[in-house]
Length: 314
Image 1 (cartoon, one colour):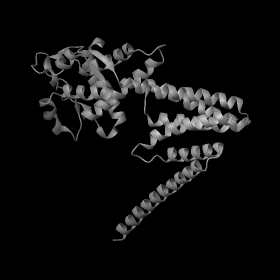
Image 2: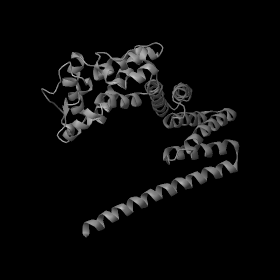
Image 3: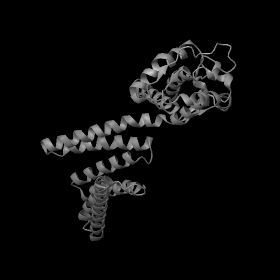
Image 4: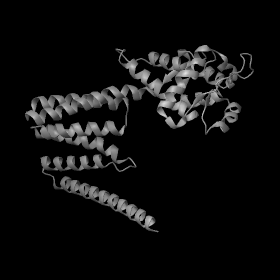
């Protein structure tokens, strides 16, 4: 239950951040802090607003996202205001048929405090030292609005929201470039769209250094720019830059087939432009690696299917 609530609230805060991005000329931490605090106070506070949030809005959102949860409001579980433990306030509000045994556990371990610790990590909130200490006490949650925007030093998770815009714009420009080239076959507008896409992906990578999607997209655009470039020197520069970005992806523990395929293509094109046999041989090695990986996956899939059939016949 606590995991479901944390995930739902995290997504609510992120949606607010994305909405904030559309109203800001220059991204500012302050707006992100205010949006996060507004929702977190509804979740963590002790008052009528918080009560209504837990009673109607939160169960509705959770049940829509997790239909099997079947969370319902339990009437009469609210302790009187003079209750010595305000953290008990929301412990029994949301009851799931399969989670009744967790109620006592939540009461003992201070439900709201655990929830806040979870959300603080999920949202990348860096609290000021006094608030980080006060949030460990039950009395902190007895306030209607325990959090203030000044209590948050920084919001590291917002970089994912900021990164979304240049990534979307870069992908849109790349699709436009591809569609335009397929329709007209002319390279001037095609190159301009690719260059614009390239700038967006560079911005995306600046915001999210080392991101796999960012590295791959940028390398893909550089490869396309190199292929349509008449100048051999400029084409080589594009291909070499694409290889630099793809080498970072190679260090990933997962075998990224599209990235390996793109690297093989870039090496082949670079080898052809430079008339370099060594580069072409490297490309051939990459193609062979791809075939080996694909064959291995096919064999594994075949073995699983055979094993499944044998189990049915037994």
